[in-house]
Image (tube, rainbow, N blue to C red; front, top):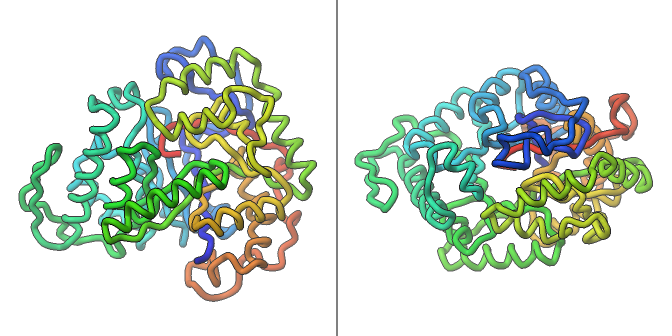
Length: 409
């Protein structure tokens, strides 16, 4: 089992601060409690193309694209970016509750033909009722997962190439069909930490994603999902969602992490924690429990820093350290059974280079990357083989701080 590296596409905006430009009150509509931010980069197509091209050049396999109110539409944005990239795959986040499963199956098939088979799907059931209602979805938490279960059954059914009938609580389909099924079938990624989420993953998904909890907690989740899948006669692979701050020395990396806290006054943190605390997502509550809203003990495991989660929803932890130390932590998670690493760093353009030129060669030297990873062929040389970490790094790379973005993170 090798390591598969993916990056993140900030379609909600990018920048050099942990302070979100969106909102913490009223589900993101009122903004009077938000600290003004500077240096925000709009998610225009030219900037997103820069990140996508950098990710491809640096050997990442795919980029995760989020979904939600504060993001550009993931399907349309990534379809445009397939035209300016050659090999990069796009892990498109979407919500089952706001689209027909048969239409989603058809969209995926069209996407595969347009892109040459470069679509991956990230199913986001949704953990915030306010956000869900904004899109016309009034189901409660557990019923949303029950609907996702049916949704994925229908999608896989209509990909079969023959008329498909389905009669469930949430969907009634007669003769459902994708006339030209996608080739290859997109892998389905999914995350959820609640009791309602586990069986959905076990029955339907290819890759179960967890947020970046300490290794012992991640191992518990792997064992949980693997056990449920075994009872279904299936095998599920595993991935993790993390931020990264890697530098040529640990001292530089931790200095960068500490600078991210400089903009966070107590009122900003309190407002964020108040809003995030209302989330119905069990995974979000687990993220909040890692730091308890306090700055005092943010290194919750070796090289695992929870500072991002003081103000950011979703993925709230970062791997911080020298390139070798970050590689050590990835190797540790990999030994537990984690195969896919969905990473980000802020700003996303600069941090892609820090990781791609620093950590990726470390992983390759340890034999953890697929042969020819990043070439799109499975053979041939690593595109970064022998490239010193400092070569070609953008002049702005020593900084870097995240903006919050919406769901599918």
